[in-house]
Amino acid sequence: MTSLTNPGDFPLTETWSYMNAANVALMPMSSAKVITDWQTDVALNGSNNFNDHAEDTAFDGLRVQGARLFNCREEDIAGGSSCTELLSSVAWAVMPGKHENVVSTDIVFPSTIYPFTRVSQHTGCEIRLAKGENGYASFDEIVKNIDRNTAVVSISHAEYTGGQLYDLAALAEVAHANDALLVVDATQSAGAIPIDAPASGADVIISGSYKWLCGPFGAAVMYLAPHLHEKLVPGFVGFRSHEDMWNLSPERLEYPSTAKRFESATMAFGCIKGLGKSIEYLTDIGIQRIYDHNIMLADRLIEGLNGLDLEVVSPSNIKERTSIVTCRVNGFDPAGIVLGLKERNVVVHKRQEFVRFSPHLYNCGDDIERAVTELSRLLKK
Ligand SMILES: Cc1ncc(COP(=O)(O)O)c(C=O)c1O
Image (cartoon, rainbow, N blue to C red):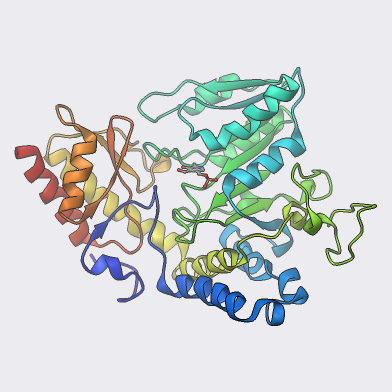
């Protein structure tokens, strides 16, 4: 089983079995070039090339690619510096009040809920975390926490520890029946799992760039459902927040009537361009094709880990699975296993007491065999 990528696109894969996209993915060299070219141009030419017009239109490429990624319109897409930044702006825009609550899970990555935790410190809204175990929280447990006072269900589409995937349409249905918004952190899914944003029913979907989207640090992409375009007033604002950003006046602030209203300030614009390029790279291959490829790799990996008598804690049901495969290594220090594998050119990650594998489109069947073989050698030592 070969990778989905061309030789040279991800040079490290020629010598390493890099299976760590859930932490930091490799980036196509074409994206890295876009970023450094932009940075070099600004260093050499300042505003001669990166002029007012270029700055005004800096997110346009991301909007085109984001629309392909999420099967939505360009007007539904905004860019930012990080998932946390965009999520925080959304959290303050919604600002659930004292008698309201925000529902998530107790196994969620902190960034998915902290922005709302900060709001709760200000307004007194309640944060409700559905109980999970071994990186898994059941759908029913989440639903139990949602009631008429729920303002927001804020979840990670795929949980970072074991890769559990939630059914967004089912969650949206429950959230909307209670007049709550579904806010989705897709940092562990976008780029690896097909997401049809309008069909999912999600109100907001945000993804960081440097994991499954194979982009750089310093960029993120957001989908904002059309019904919120003129309703949500961003929590974070700056001179870009005004609908005509170069019509500078401190005396009024009128927001664009699209998702663009969440773009507030200058940023590492090269990173936004690099993220756009990475999304283009992935969507040209096809997210469904990447999903099928990654699941096949995960299948082989699970088979190999079972053969070593290791307990895989990631869900086995296809509807709840991603290519994140997490296992327990009883009797061994997971950090030692991760280090031992790295010394053998196999890159995986430790999360809690587990070892987490996260193969992506640039991995091939040989990577899996090498990981399982090297792991078996380590366990025998
Ligand atoms: C689900 C999820 N959201 C967000 C982040 C990180 O967000 P940021 O890049 O804004 O720090 C991570 C990082 O592991 C993550 O797993």
